[in-house]
Length: 358
Ligand SMILES: Cc1ncc(COP(=O)(O)O)c(C=O)c1O
Image 1 (cartoon, rainbow, N blue to C red):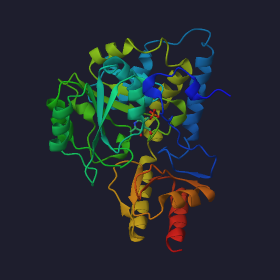
Image 2 (image 1 turned 90 degrees about the vertical axis):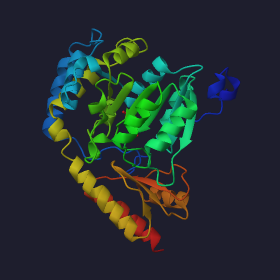
Image 3 (image 1 turned 45 degrees about the vertical axis):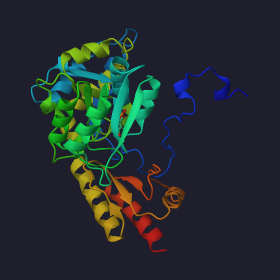
């Protein structure tokens, strides 16, 4: 049988592992930070109607510029943004890949502060961009001093600040973004995949005016409960959008994706109605785990990074055997848990309580 090592793979991909969070069909799936609440039925009906209209036109290629969707996204973000400043792709992963294709590549580098989102180094290898990993301090909080020091030392072509940060949940302060932007002359991406859960911080889109190297990436996969549709987006200077047009595949956003996302944005209020409850469940989970003696890192997202597990692998497997999937990222003593519905959160609290008192 042929194996990877028999193939003339690009050197920078040799030995790499693909992204692969488990996708077990378990009753309580809290491992990839989705919104676990179902979409309201009236919204489903409106999306289906829009899809039906779109299907009647699929003999033709879709709008390559997805203008209606970009207008809807600009309206959703507000702050005077216009469609010319918006871009979208199949998940923010694809948006980030396009940014690396346009601004990274051989001889160029991408820097971020780890632990952070595990796809960044994979996107770097896929585009042959050098990956520079700068460790976060013990509390995972970025400071202007740390960020400026790293950017001045490494002078990357692209830097990503993830706020709130996956997998630690750590919020990102505005002063850090401002200091980072002024510390180097490359592309600065602020990844706001979890922004809607972070009521305490203003979006970095408010910093876009006069900052043409600042890119703010967002997604409908998390708070918007739309992970299955695959719709990520980005707000930036119109010149950045022109750069992304150079690397996107023609018609990369299907007519069905465009129709579903545009319809969902019409109902953004209803789609985001569960955010308050998810934040409540996150805080309830944090309180319960702290009472059990675990170390819960402050989170502005819909998940918690929890330390103090003597045997994280054992706890992960024991919960998995009970039909509860959480995330084991290989951070010593730690596990990451998504805040689910009230019932799911109760199930995970009860299961960890039982394991702890054993
Ligand atoms: C920080 C961060 N950025 C981006 C993504 C990618 O999301 P998507 O491609 O579904 O938009 C994720 C998904 O988990 C994430 O955690």
